[in-house]
Image 1: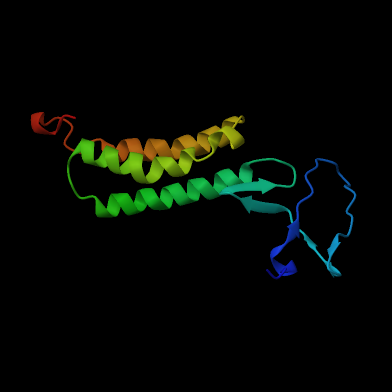
Image 2: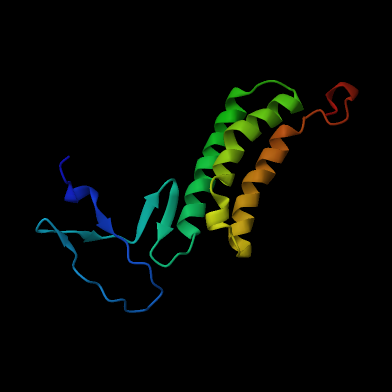
Length: 133
């Protein structure tokens, strides 16, 4: 197996204002430093804050929710809820034990996707007897 230094990068995790940056080399080639890295679907930043990760998963979940809204044209709460639970919610919950949000702004950002999904799953004909979920 051949070594590819272009695919390797260094992520120094620290919250220091002026961290020590050591120039690492492998096989005579210097590796580049990175501010964040995606590892097993989780975006890890150099200061271990989860803002970038939460931004990316909420954007992906909103995109998937928009896809579900455009393509699920059935007026059934059960079908809409199943589509949300199978396509959107796993994006929001993947490896949450690692990046569990602790600030109110991060929690608010995640809950905004869930509020949009809740409005989608409720029927538009709220007062009709046949449309009650």
